[in-house]
Structure formats: C-alpha cells, structure tokens
Image (cartoon, rainbow, N blue to C red):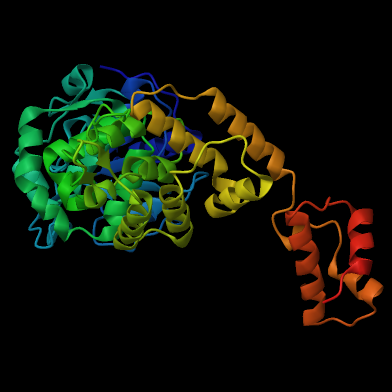
Length: 446
C-alpha cells in the first residue's frame, strides 16, 4: 500500500543519500500514522541498518551523544530529524530506560520493540507502507493497542501507560481491552517515572482535543489515583441538595467542566478540572439535608499549590494555575464598584481574565447551567470598562520626572511616595488624565 505524502526536501534528500550508499532506510514513528490519517506532518524519524558511525560519515554535520543509536540532524523545525540504527532493547531496571541496547539486523526486530501498533509502522523509500503488527487495522478501528504483550511493554517503560492515554485523547481513539487491563494492572509502576515526565504528558493530554475523555481514561485505568490523588478523592462527593443547582458529584462535575471549558490553554483546562478539589475536605451536610462547601476555593488553592510543586510546574505555570483555582468563586454582579472589580482583576491577573471567564463557563456548563447569563455578560462588560483605568503606578499619566520638577526634589524615596499617593487617589476615582494629575500633585503633601 503506497501512502500519498509530500515530504520536505530535506527528508527526500536523506532518503536519496541512504539509497545511494546502499543502506536500508525507513520513515517511522508518529509521522507515518499522521500521514495515513491525513494530518500535518512534523517530527520526522528514520530507522536504518547503518550504525551511528556510518550515519555520521553520510552526515558529518549530524550529532551523536547517546547510547540509543540516534543521530540528530538539524532542520528548520525546533526538533531535529532523528535517524536511529535498528536496535533490540533488554532489561528495564528503572522501568523507563533499557539496561542493554544492541544493534538489530532487520526492520522487523526494530518495529516489534515499539510500544503501540499505530506507531510501529514504516514507510520505505517509495513510501510503501510496511505494517508487521496490525497498526493499519487498529487505525481504521480507532484503537490503541500495544505491540505484543502489553504487560511487557508497560513493565519496560511505565511512562508508556500515560502516552497511550494521551495519544487516545489526541486522536479520539479507544484503548483496546487487553491494553487497558494491562494499564490497570501496572498503574503503580508510574511511581518510577520522574515528576517532570508526568507533568509533560499531563500537559499534552490537557492540550488534546479530548482532555475530559483523556482524564476519564486516567481515572478508569488507575493512573488517576497515582498522578492526581486529590482529584480522585472528589468522585462520590455529593453536591445535590435542596436549593442547589448541581446534578453531578464533585468529580463528575469537574470532568464535565473540563469538557466544556472553551479555553485551549493546558493550564486553564487543568485548573478547570481541579477547581473544586477542596470540596472533598470542606463538605458539610446540615440537618435539613443542605450540603455546603464553605471556603472550598481556598482549600482548593492550597491543594493546587501542592500539585504544582509535586509535578514541577514552572513558576509561571504555578502562578496562573493557583490564581485560577483560588479565585474561581468570584461573585458575578455588574453593580460592583470599580474598586471591587479592580481587586478581582488584580487577584486573577489582567493576563488571566479571559481564562478565568473560560473556567467559569466550563463550571456553569459542567453543572447543568447555560454557558452564560445576562449578569455574566454585564459583568464582563464592567471588567472591560474598568480595565481602561490604571492598575499600577507605571500606568499613571505622570512620571517621577514630573514629581521631581513640581516638588523640586531630587531622585529618592519621596518620588515614589508622591506617585503612590496620586495612584491611590486614582483608585478612589481621580481621573487618570495628565492635567488633572499634575493639578492634584501640586496640592498633595507627603
């Protein structure tokens, strides 16, 4: 079966050079799968019977600094093109990397060491498909299946379990029953994987077209309790009670909120998933049957901080993640004063306002309400209106130079005190116009 693709010139050049040198060379990996699915093609990988030393003779500009037989060649994309010698792997003491690698003699040996059937196909020089493990059939049936015994694959590299879930979420596929059962049996082995690797896979899953279904796979496979035990504790925490709008338990509501979150941002989606995680610790059932979760957003923020630290979030990721969770319970009232709305914007962060609203929309839809309401729309309009006002001293229409000239002072702390005094008056309603500020500056005493 010939696959119709239009590879970059550099890829065609690599195929030509290997053919001329009389080495076997095949395109492998996710790019083959994506070519069959008609997706855009990135991250070109090759496998060959040439050794790394022989590859470097063909490509002197290449770089080889690993034990896996992979030679990298720079290209226009951020990720280099990788050419790897046919190999056989054995022994995975750390549940992640092979203890021993030896060069294989055939393509078949190389393909059968790979993890998923849909990623274990190859294209030859003429773009003819080579499928030795049933990958094409699994693509047609939208199935994620391991090559060989899934228990062996996951024992070799425990991160493969998360990758299987993530790829299922990216493609909208189902995990084949034996493969899912193997994940359930081996889920505890994910503890051998570094927090950084788990973070990367979780963020990719959140960025996928089906993040809610992806999380449900984590939940149903047993990986969820290993990766996000705090989130798993919310399933079964009841919310339905007299006078309350909720129709799901906390965990189910959170997954549905994620499903309906309109933001494509991974951190926003993850914050949407765990925004109510504090409810597991704050639930109270009153005598009349009413269920309360007072201050759950503060408890959720504490948990979000622990999650971010445990999974090695960057400082920027952590700041946004915790802010969105901490302030998601904001009051929607278009009648709030400018000062109240300014406090909300400062708490959330001006750059995070759209994502905060996206979380609220997901929260509403995930709880059975409409996406928005007239009150929410009015509140959004008020946020836009208040954003026209200054949020910090640099936003003022006067500067320290103006202060020094008008007050006849030299650079020093007093300049900042005068600017702070003017800024506080602007917060209370003084118009942020240069002439008005200069006039008031003449009157101010510090």
